[in-house]
Image 1 (tube, one colour):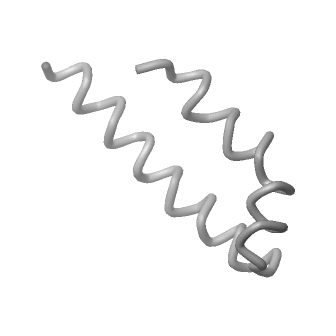
Image 2: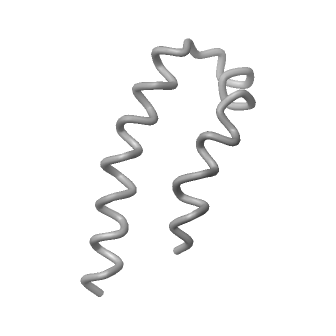
Image 3: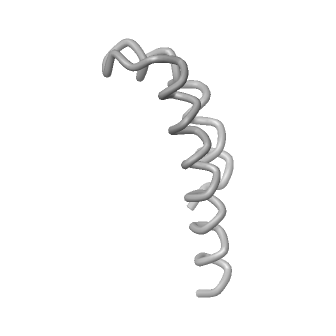
Length: 49
């Protein structure tokens, strides 16, 4: 798992995702907030292994 790609890719691809999926800025921000928790959990789980 590459922590850098987990954290940077969503921001780099944000415009592309918004255009393809046709979602609002608010929805993108919600996805980013959910991703914060998800990434933290993934990192913690990888350390435990």
